[in-house]
Structures are given as structure tokens and as C-alpha cells.
Length: 208
Image (cartoon, rainbow, N blue to C red; front, side, top):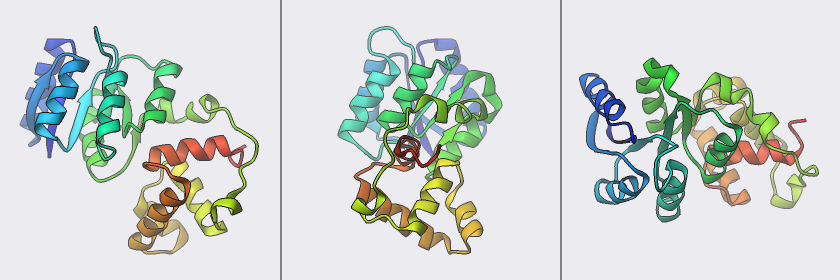
């Protein structure tokens, strides 16, 4: 796994690089600003970009939005000390793959591996707040998007944070079938990834 670390605290970025490299992760570059994040991502095309949110000049959220507008497949994992509702909601809306707190330092390695495998990673304290952050709209007309009952069931499980394997076990399906279902759902709803699908579900009114 090739990653880039961006944090305006040079001690933090250097410490992260040392720790992750000792665990077998290849850190291809380290940056200290949002502008550097955009440049380094374009130059190295890492598997995962691990980035802080609050930085002088261009913030992590702003740089992530620019990167994702150019590469919708970019895997961006935010690592921050701030759990502000505004930041969490923005990270969800732009399509970040995860949002974890620096207090959960020991969980960074596992979070990177989860993001690399296609999962979205949000700390437990953050996941529990998401339904309250996303204001539901009027109940969505799933039939208009040709979303059937099985697909709606899968959407609800994705919103609950279950992996493809866990959904497959819950619904007695193969992982491949679940992947195909989710891919089809994303196409029908014109969404980028599982994170946006979860936000869409909470806004649909069905989660209430």
C-alpha cells in the first residue's frame, strides 16, 4: 500500500511516517498543506491519502474536494483532532473514505487497510452522530430509480457500516453478488461510493 501523509504539524507527519513504515506501509511522500496535498496526489497517485483537515491556506476539505473532482476514485482518509459536525458532514458529502480522530492513533493502520479494501471508515463516536447530522428529506420514491426491496435492504446495511462480507452473511448472498448489487445501486442513484450512499439513505427518510 502506497500512501501520502499531509499534516501541517511536521512532528505529527514525521511520527506517522515512522510508525506506518515500521508496520510495512510505503509512505511515498509527506506534505504540510492543502496545496501540497493536491500537488503530491497528482504526482504520486497514492493508494490512500491520509490528511489533516485544519491547515493554513487551503484546508484538507478544500484540497480533498479538488482532488476528488479530478479523480472520483481517490481514497482520502481524514485524520484530525476536530470532530466538529460541520467538518464531518462536509467530509461525507464530498466523498471521503473515512474520518478518524488522532486520539485513535493506534487504529490508523487498520483504518488504512479498511479504506484500501474498499470500506468507509468512521470512528464509532462519529458514526453514531451521522443520522443526526443528515437532515432527512421527504420520503424518497425508490421505485422512480428502479430500486427494489432487496436493494433497499442492502442500502440500509451499507448505511449501518457493514462490509460486503457482513452483508453477504446477513442476506445469505455471495460477496460478488453484493458487490454487483451495490455497483448497480450507485449507478441508478448517480452516487460515487458507499459513503455517499449512506448519506443518501439517511436523507431519504427511510432511516427515521
